[in-house]
Amino acid sequence: MNPDTLRALLREVAAGETSPERALERLKSLPFSDLPFARVDHHRALRCGAPEVIFGEGKTPEQVAAIALAITAREQSLLVTRASPEAAAAVRAELPDVAYDPLGRTLFARRGAAPPPPPLPVLVVSAGTSDLPVAEEARVTAEALGSRVDALRDVGVAGIHRLLAESERLQQAGVVVVVAGMEGALPSVVGGLVSRPVIAVPTSVGYGAAFGGLAALLGMLNSCAPGVTVVNIDNGFGAGYAAAQINRLQAPAP
Image 1 (cartoon, one colour):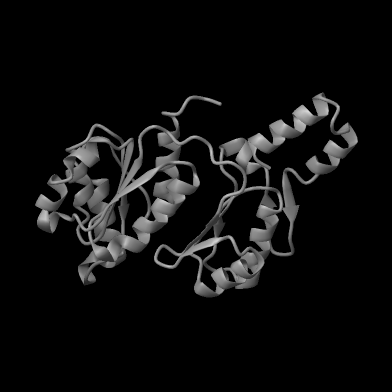
Image 2 (cartoon, one colour; image 1 turned 180 degrees about the vertical axis):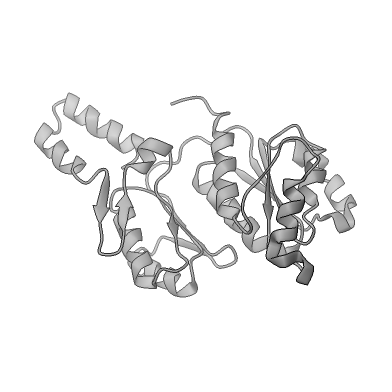
């Protein structure tokens, strides 16, 4: 149940259109519901502003589909990350309106009206084409949480002129997510060009000495540019979520 749904239910009770007993029945499963393999948190949208998100990796397609049904049955939007094609097929067999992004491995379906987006977009910047799966995960996540999202692709430091040519778009963003592998230098460059928060995402892209993204992670943690914060390796979801939360502060309170 999201805040709008709960608010509507309370108004129905106040107006005498719904009995307190009927409202109580609807609220009984509000905190969470029990499945044999998961406890689905239905209270999270009220606490945190966004419903529970399913991490698909390590779950069977049947488990992902069952949790997805439990979430959408409470009129909550659905977001699944790290969704395999098999999990996507299982979810879409039950919920045909769910959109699958095979590049970012996400599943998304909105339930209820989308809130008005903040005035400025989240900008997702990716260093190279190999970084796009993580960048796409960040993009879909930020959009699912209500932000408009713009994207700059393949603007890594090996050809810095490609980034500098887009300085106006960089300045127009509310929050910038920068996704890069190899040596992870791009967030420092972006951090020196903008006055907005920069969220850096190291990816596991690179040859042997990249150590599966560890080199990029350490480079970003040691950035000399102020305002750069760093999430875990390949964690596009965490970056997109944080970016949308920060960006939401621009929007007027409901």
